[in-house]
Structure formats: C-alpha cells, structure tokens
Image 1 (cartoon, rainbow over the protein chains, first blue to last red):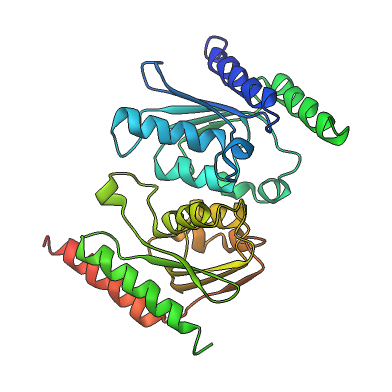
Image 2 (cartoon, rainbow over the protein chains, first blue to last red):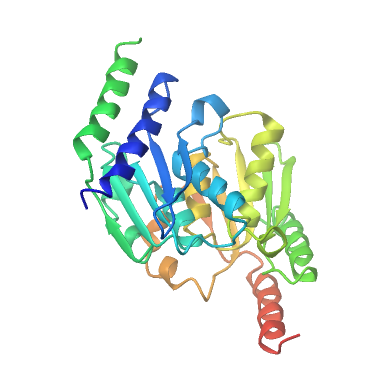
Length: 149
Length: 149
C-alpha cells in the first residue's frame, strides 16, 4: 500500500489547487491497471458556477474522453474526500474497479447514515488513506470561510 | 394533477426519440415555477458512447446553461423512469424542487432495495405518473433487444 499512497499524494496536490482558488479542497486521480495516470482533477464548483463540477466527475469525464472507452473497468480512482451520492453513482456507471478515498465528509450526514450506498458501487473500496492530510486541507478551507477571509 | 401530466406526456415524447435510436427509452423535462419548459432531453448513452448521458443529466446540464444559475431550486423535473443513483445525486446537488417520475426500473434492484436513497433528494417526489405508457416503451425496447432486432 505504501507505494500506492503516492497516488493519494497526487490527489492531495490536486486538492491544493482548489484551496488556492477558494474552492472546497478536493482532488481526484484516475489510474489504469498498469498504474499509469489517466486523468487528474480538482473541485471547480465555484469557478464553473456549477454544483456538478466535483473533482471525481471531472476526472472521470476526462478519462472517458482520453481513453475513448465506454467503461473504466480497468481503472481505479483516488479521491481526497469520501464521494457524494452523484459521484458514487458515476463511479458505478463507469464501472471503476477500486475506490480509494481519504477523509470522511463531516457535512455529508446523508451518506454517513446510509453506508449501504457504498454497496456494489465498485469491487473494492478503501477509506481513510492519508486521512489526516486530506482532512487538514478541508479544515483550513472551512476556517477561512468562517473567518470571512 | 391532470393538467400537469401534460409534462409527463412531453417526457414520453422525448423517450420515444431514444427508442427510435435504439437507446433505452427515457425522457426528461425541466419546468420552472411558472410552468415554462426550461429544457427537454432523452437518453443518449449509446449515441455518445458514454454511460453518463442519461436524460435527467442532459436536461439538468441544459437547464443550468440556459438559466445561468447555480441552482434549479425553482424547477421541477419530470422523468419517465425512476432515476438512478447518479441522477438522484445530481437532482439533489442542483436543488430541484419536485421530482415526478413514471415507471419503476425493474433492472435497478439496488435502488428498489434502498428506498432511503430518495430521502432528502428534493422536497416532493411523486412516482407512477403515466406509468403504463412509460413502462410500455421500456418493454418494447427490451423485447426488441431480446429478439436481436
């Protein structure tokens, strides 16, 4: 797992791009079975003024365009925050093999109370990877928001 | 309700466009609070070779572009088939007010077994509208697929 955490570090680098733009800091990386990086993305909801521009969604859209395949069944996704309902649905529809996520979302009580949402989304799910660093970025963002900076 | 079912009839007209193209027949209509139609769409998964091109998603993307608003909180969505997990997440994120759907999805056992997915998606949800006609289109499609036509 140690070597693979490299991908979460790259997802964290993506999340930092969101933070600089005053977006909720979330990053995502899609990797194929040979461990090649297929796409990278960060949350751009405010920039695009569109609540659907989550990091996972953008990374998956890019990967579909790049591979010209209908499904990403040989790919894994690394994301710094536990995916929302839409992103879980997308991960399922494009048949991503493994989901690796960092922080839990303290604001997403719906998902927390419905953990069965994760059933059958993909074949393997691993949470809490580099959780401290992923959560720290979120804390920095929300502190900034609360202080009005 | 009688007059409003007009919108489901229009969603059915959209679904028929999918059927002609050998796509799973699903249509969606977005209507604002003054009952103006904001967008229409039909399922284009095969045409786009992209499993995310569901009728609801396309209709919502179009409505966001057209209104240039971040949220569709004054809008309702009419869709001929009970939305999947991704589409439910999208409906929630864009804050659509009311969801009206036609047929239940006999293939979507995950959603059927997790009806709590519908909790808090939007303020009002009405199912089974023009269900017979919506289901009939789906039956025609799946019979065609099974017979190899």
